[in-house]
Image (cartoon, rainbow, N blue to C red):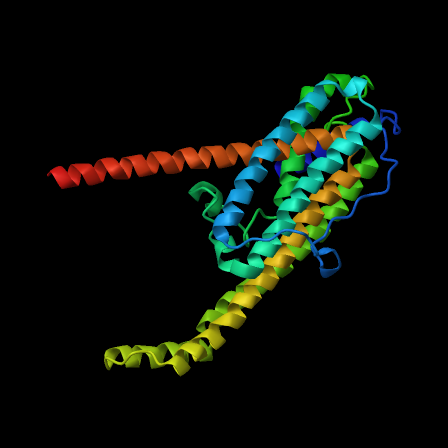
Length: 309
């Protein structure tokens, strides 16, 4: 938040002394991505969590390849046309859309695995919000990168030179981001409240009664009867379905927040933002995996010492 406020204040002061038309505007109509039912048909099929894990691993490899393309495009911006940069940005955002639609299909078969994803590291899992990254985090990423690039090119901006990066946002772009962030945070909180209410249903009357009945049977040495198994399933299934609906809303908001940010940026600025997003995602995954491997190694050593003693 401090990065965001500092950046906005500095940019507003600077902008008053610079040419207000120094940003190349996006001329193409904004792209819309959503997981709502009207756009939910997708030709992907998963037999189980293991297949989605393989898909995710391949998706991450492709993300790294797109990162390399984005970095190359950043270095060759003076030689690239707006249309070529637009095309690259569209391919990268469609890559995210591909992931979320595939994830939605997997969730219909096994939503619980999405909430405890074995394809993520423990570090990544610790920061999950309803099966993924918190939508408001996209704005923190944006403003952190804006602040870094603004400070790095402050002298150029004071002299009225265009930097065409995230440190060179216009007043109208800042206003659009502010509105988009407010809408996103409001919906983020609505979904958080939905999840909190749904979590409390684990202790509702049907669950408490059923847990008592089964516990009494266990104490009496009885086995669960088929009718009771069906009753257990009928009580638990609506809670699983509720998780699926909440996850769908959360993923839809994640996707719309990402695309909304990209739509406000110029193609050149979008390249910088998508580079930052990919770098953060890939490095966090890498660091988390390394920590998990180190932890397993330490556990192995302790178990070996315990066995030898």
